[in-house]
Image 1 (tube, rainbow, N blue to C red):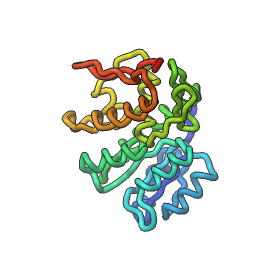
Image 2: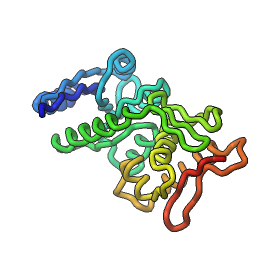
Image 3: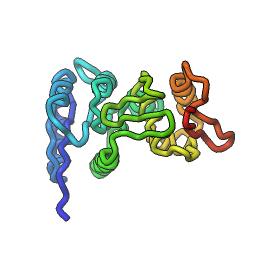
Image 4: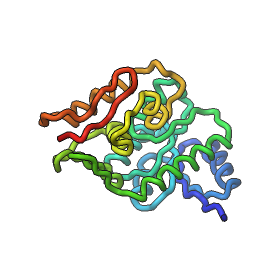
Amino acid sequence: MTKQPLRILYVEDDARSAAAVSDIARQNGDVLVWEESGSAALLRAGMEAFDVIILDRMLGDIDGLTITRRLRESGIGTPILILSALGRGSDRADGLDTGADDYLAKPFEPEELMARLRALHRRSIGREHSTVIIYGAFECHLKARTAFRDNKHLALSPKEFELFRYFMENAGETVTREMLLRDVWNIDFDPQTNVVDVNIGRLRRKLEEGFDAPALETIWGSGYRILEGR
């Protein structure tokens, strides 16, 4: 079966870096569109469809985290990979918390970059088969990236929405911290991080505010489970 080329939007203000990644994409048979500024990238992403977006974190006009946040707030759910020289655990957590789907530190191997992009694209295709997930009183609208409980809109941040969606995709099952770190944050380097607990607490408050029935159950020693909310 012939491999369909990925259509990639790459946002990078360094011409040499952009040329290197463009060569990698071209050698792989993919189509890469390069934008030099964050403002131009936001316009392009709003007008054209892409399979994946690669964002440099440190840009001259708008930083990559702000671009990611604005894209998610505007309802654009295209998978985003942040490519950055800032590679500490806290840097990765910041990028993923903002709404990015993956984070790759520089320097990187070309094969790893392309493998991650293909994985992000495969995951996004799987999400397109269903646009709304309903479980009990909860609704998760994947394309619009909105959440509801008993028809009440829940104002979730980009990362809170990703977390909510993961619970909805695994409704009725216990979700472990390791699963959340791996699948929501793409983190496997710091099992002692408290990023899961902090974000679970924030999500729980937003899901339960104004309602009597609990939304999330803590399974001590195992993980968490979303409840029907009724």
